[in-house]
Image 1 (tube, rainbow, N blue to C red):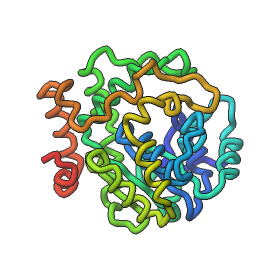
Image 2: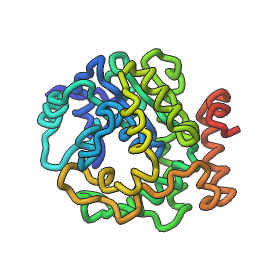
Image 3: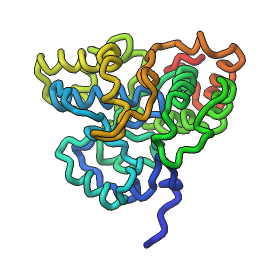
Image 4: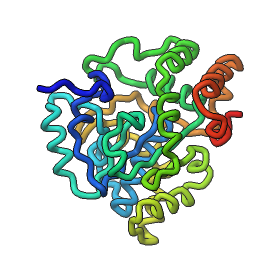
Length: 284
């Protein structure tokens, strides 16, 4: 087998470079390209609702909107790609990859949601500590945080949020890219849905629009959280009760981060991102 380009990354619990290197994109594909905890699952639900005009019969959102680069237990990457090939158009995938690492950036349509890194960090803390690690074969104990400072330190050292935003920002005006702020979706979900539909050129009935607004609401997703915490149909939830769809607030970090922790997260953004991006993110 030929050596893969290093840009596809190294194998990990949630990352198989073979899936990225050999994925065949289609012009009808939609890729959700977010940093972790920046509204990914929310966008998976919004797009699935738009595509189906309100389907709620699914058991796992990951069966409807797969995580592109995440390997599935007991499935070879070749078989997983064959499953992707069997999906009808329009296919929707989620990914946490940077622009350079995302296959199909010149072919597919790309929707990127960005969220305040302070809120992402706090959400990441609760996300990791809410996992049932015993249901994740190979998951290291280090996925648990002893306290918020440990999470902030790892968030900064790993730097996934900063790499993701820095890589996508130069492409925000590309015709096949739609960049949305988490706070704007939160403030007016209906308006965000209208922007997405216009960008994709999908047909949406008034009934489908109403269903999407309802089923993508925080209240509906919280009440049906089991649909978003199973890795596949019939699988158990990998999260403790109430740990995944928790609050979804804008600015919730203010109650959980110290002034020093919040300042460190923002300082890294100022160091890694251009001033116009800082202004867009309201991190000035």
